[in-house]
Image (cartoon, rainbow, N blue to C red; front, top):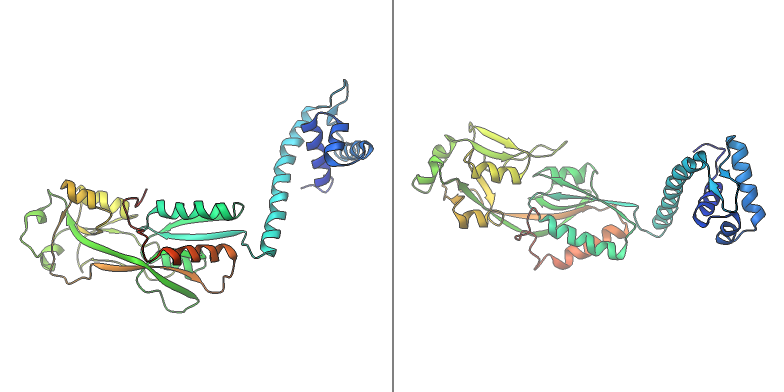
Length: 308
């Protein structure tokens, strides 16, 4: 903001525009009328323009005044936000909380949490991001997120974070009805599965080694951005692979995907965690931790609301 324009002068300009006169603006600002007049005169002198057309009884903005008012109100909004953020930080509230969500987690459930949070702290900024596989852990250890929900398996070495179990997800090996493996005798051997293309969701890790699930050495792979796309690709018969049972329950019931038993011995149940950086002590994080701890025993994070 140019040094010639003060926030006080912008507040005076805004009050005059809202109330329609210098006298009414003075009343609104709890100031004497001469103080309001002086503030506008100094502002006009510093800018070298007329901000008001003083003909008539009502104060009317010139085109230059209207332009300054629009820009000035944006600056006042930013300035007021800075003041609120400083006050929140001083009382232990973060200005922003960053939450990374694994793509196995129901976005509906997370938004329900956000809805509850805004009842307590409506001015705190929440920044939600979506991650796949090891990308959830990567977001935490690289400090791109303060809290992660739905991190798969054990966390990476190095510490600096705490974690608690959120629930278990069951994965099943599925193929489309028209795929060659649909009529193959069960259990399917690894050698047989290896002949056909797999569909894999790309790990979003930036620094940690990427994780893969259910891929066989030498197997052709179609890599897609997330589980939503993986589900659709497998329904089209573009490949095979493991998908969460809760995610495809309707597809299985409708016959759009067929569950096939395999011989690979791969564990089909995986624990997901929520985790946070231990040095983060803000009240917003504390609120989410309390809610997650309170619901972890009986709350279904993987219900029919998944992905919606």
